[in-house]
Image 1: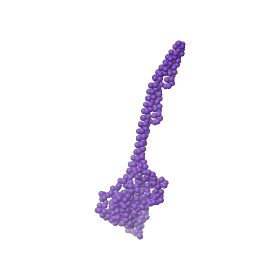
Image 2: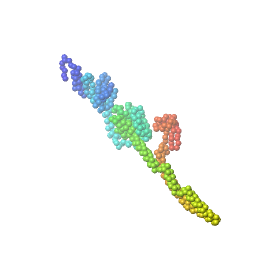
Image 3: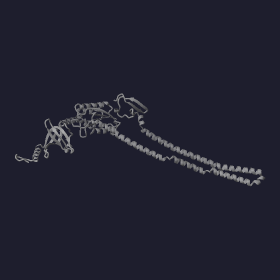
Image 4: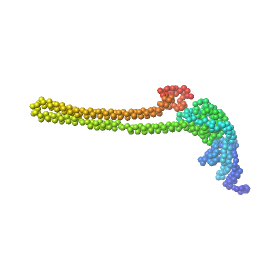
Length: 463
């Protein structure tokens, strides 16, 4: 639309359209250097702020599609923004629509880092064959980072959850600003002199390239290279990088990932031990149940013995039966004596003697007849009793041996067996187990349980 007649009035829409067309044509692609101010993200994902210098402010916007490819920025950052000037016709508001944004110092810093990276790469300090493997049995972890930052607490959260027995030693340092590189390098050398550290995590949280630059300095790179302890570099987030990532033995995307690397073997061993313990308990319970099912109940055994005794007793003539036979025979003899009474008058003496002999013969016959059967029954009953006792003793001895074997296996898993190997269990006055030196202070009373007894001690120095 063109306009060259000053006498013809224009509508507001026409004026805004003219301005928009002029801005879109004249300021299609420009670069602006300024400080971010009044940063305010919108629910739609766009970001609005002003670019300011000492004298002026330029309303600016970064649409969501462009924001995804840009580095993080905040109020006060000095940036170089590329984009176009445009006008929103409905409100007449002018905006700088930014499509690319970098920190004002990132270009020079990036070039410096690339040059330094190439230098150490040519020295072979980044070669894979120079990397030290992480040890399998890690007992003490050293951490070089800020004592007040979130990184240290993130690492502690991961290690306490996955490997609570792991010893942690913090080597506090500055991780940003002037002199940070000197304290980082000094703490790495201090950890090597400490000698008890198995693995060292060197890192910090996310930030701009300038914030992370201390981890790309000569001092830090050389300290990492000459470290005898394997080092994990955990600087920033996944997308961040520093030269320490290239020089270190292992690079972790975040400090939490670094802690997971260190605790991987311990965590897996704990899981395997827990699974084996659960499996062993299940197998033992199943074995005990199976053995219990093989052992007859006491009531069943008693019933079996009673039945056998009853059967043997039933096979013998009862005393009542024997008594009835004897009684019958005596009655018969008496009857014959009565019937022969008349005749006995004649031969009284002879008959009396004869009847006595007859009676003696009967008694002897009965005795001879019953004695072998009674003796045989007693022998059979005694043999059965010995057989049952021998069978029960054998089964009981077998169960005793199996019980002692299971007891021996259980003792091997007992905490007392750990104490026998020279380890100790430390508790405070309240009986709480001490796992971290931070849980005690000078003057505290501790009770140290060893294999044979317990030692009472007073903390003089918490090293």
